[in-house]
Image 1 (cartoon, rainbow, N blue to C red):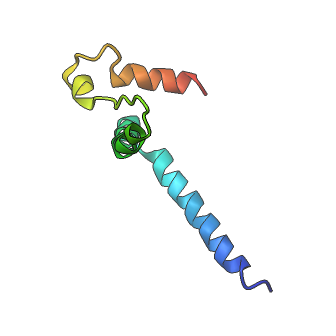
Image 2: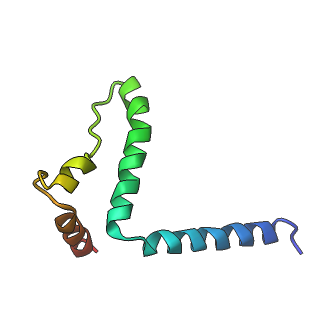
Amino acid sequence: MDPVRPGIDRLLSQKLSRRSRLAALPFEEKVRMVVELQKMQEPILRARGRNVKVWSLDKVNAGSDPIPLTMLKACAMGSR
């Protein structure tokens, strides 16, 4: 038996489990996660001279954003 194979099987199983947990999250939580990732990469991209726009959840929550989360969700569901 290949000594590496059990480790690979375990990693693939954990990857599938994590993807299932992420897929089960509400759409709004997924958007929040994307915004957090944008915040983390913003300083790196700016240092490279890139123009970066981080989404503002405050505008969405306050209702002043022209595209509310419900509309984003409908667009995302329609793109499948």
